[in-house]
Image (tube, rainbow, N blue to C red; front, side):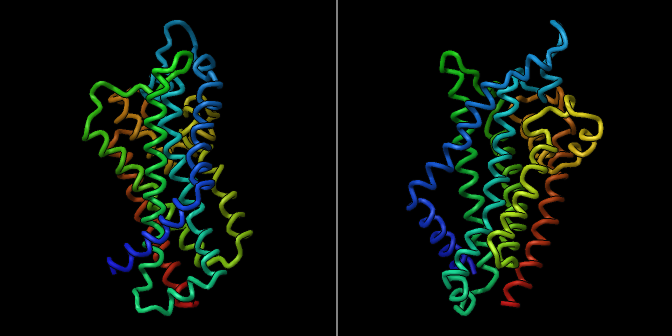
Amino acid sequence: MLTETLALVGRDLRRWYRTPGQIILVFTTPLIWLLLFGQAFNIGKLAQGGPQTDLRYVFGGATDYFSFMAVGQTAFIMLFASLFSGVSLIQDRRLGFLSMLQVAPIPRSSIPVSRMMSTVFKSMLQASVVLVVAALFAFIPGLTGLRFSHQFGIIEAGGLVLFLVLLGSSMAALFVALGLVVRNEEVLFGLINLLNFPLMFTSSALIPISLMPDWLQTIARYNPITFVVDGMRQLVFHTSIGSVYPVGVDLIGVGIFSALMIGLGAALSRKALLRS
């Protein structure tokens, strides 16, 4: 199974990097968010209750909104890339490639697994670029940059990777399965729009929980995106000041969510491939 899966991963990645326009859009869109949303919106001023206000309690350990938002932006990338992972499967079905794979002498499970792996790889690459560029902004006059803690090291970097991989795997598993179940692109795009913005804007990825209405705070505390960005911020800024949960709780929360979504995705994918 491993050989067949890796071959399909390679095929999906080659199709991706051989489309320059797609790569340009994939990398420029998050950077536009960093420049326009992160730099232009001075939410730090709105959160400043007085001269003695410690913004770290508002921004999850970050001393400014841009650093807070830049970490949340990586979760947005993982979510957005995963949501669209099933679209290419519908295109492969329309071109007949999916039917060829289903009759080929390969394990059928390699079809969804390979698409999940390629999706996580591409989204991790995008998230890494965003973190690096956000940090480089600190060296550009007039811009605010992402400020990592001096204690940030290999262990913390490994923790960031773990949080992002768990989030990317869970969402990719679900939407790859939906790409196999749903036969119509319009229906899948409808599901994407139905989940994309509610998941993002009911989390602490872009807006601090303390600035939300009470009813939205309750929802945000149980949003899986909140578990991811809350844990990542504690690793990046090396403090639990302003955090929602301890890092261990964040990891358990996103781990449970990932296991549930991967299990659901596996069940839906198996049923769809047998039906086809």
